[in-house]
Length: 102
Image 1: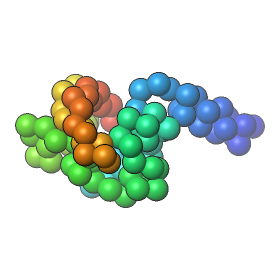
Image 2: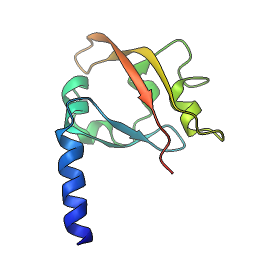
Image 3: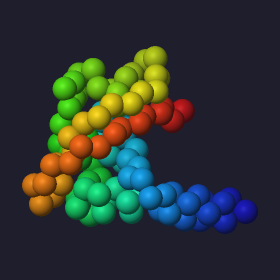
Image 4: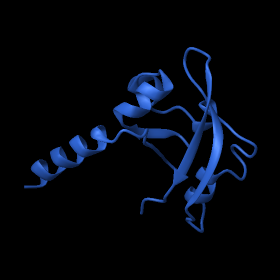
């Protein structure tokens, strides 16, 4: 039953049209869906373990960004518009929405 549920969740995760990234406490990407690969131009293997600051460029990246606030001690949700730099060098404005996973 657990394996079946995991399979359903993985299918749903990879069916979402929006890019989804999951970062650990060090702001390293530990999971992502297929849409995140398509949007960024990077493969899953290229993004896993990479810091999100290497992909997103915002006013407060790495210090007071919405990702660090979600990962911080207060676990707040947030939204911001940041520049995503694709593998091909093309920059694109994207909206980040964060939610801490506990």
